[in-house]
Length: 233
Figure 1 (cartoon, one colour):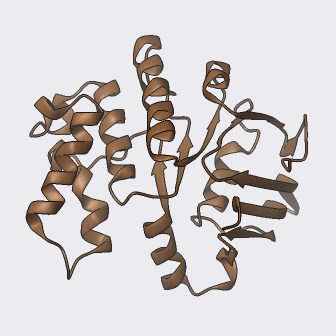
Figure 2 (cartoon, rainbow, N blue to C red):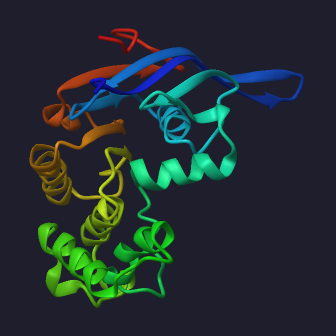
């Protein structure tokens, strides 16, 4: 098996801005190895989130290609890209994106329902969701809705949800951005523990340099360019 899970070549992203183009990403090359924790650090507006969305199949690059396990994400039909994304990639966002009318348990289960709508075994699904909530320290909050949870608890529910389908690659967009320092530390430790236990590959984009301590590798980005390396090693 190839030890590179994700490879991106010459990634550009630009948006129309009047008569000009707003060039957000400027020719980025990147490789991520299996079971690696990669942290991309940069200020607001550097292009971090745009890059993560492109690598995760959520937003098409203006130029360049992204391969996950050798599959070119933007050369396959939308439905196949969505299927690959659901099976291989988990997302953790800064703003949680939990459904307010659902409990923590129900929010965690959602990705599995999408993936296995016709062959779901209810007991197995619920057991796995409970196990994940236990691992993130929220088994006693399983039946609470998001507005009954703190920010740190909501983010841990989001992590459990991202792991429900056992993705090979976990993409985290400013995961501590809305958390206090204590909750941030707990989340960082949690992400590292999942990497060590399950050998999942993590890519974290953040402006918070405390994320560096969890990383196997750190890349700095500014104005759509990598500063310290080209992302390939």
